[in-house]
Length: 85
Picture 1 (cartoon, rainbow, N blue to C red):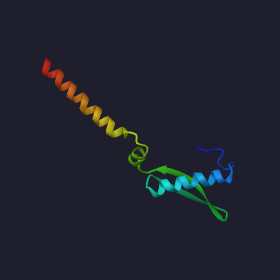
Picture 2: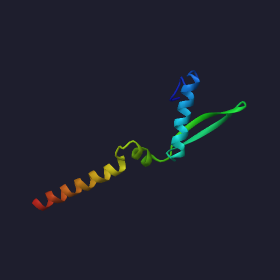
Picture 3: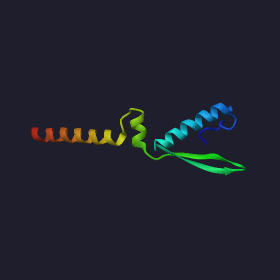
Picture 4: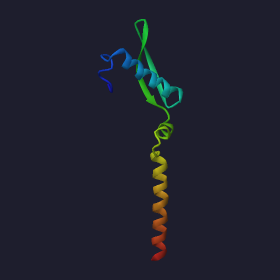
């Protein structure tokens, strides 16, 4: 369980958390999975569906793109060394 004290949190904290999670779902970054509980529902899990969008929103480089850039750069270096020999 990632948020073990969620159930014990104040209702306004829970509400803020759920609003933020729903906002990310509307942006198609995460998916919320709900579980029926008594008369209502409870958030069972949230999962990231679009890591690329998540990195874009945080203005951080996407690891796969960065790895491709590094691979190209290293390939160019290897080719340069091959030409020297």
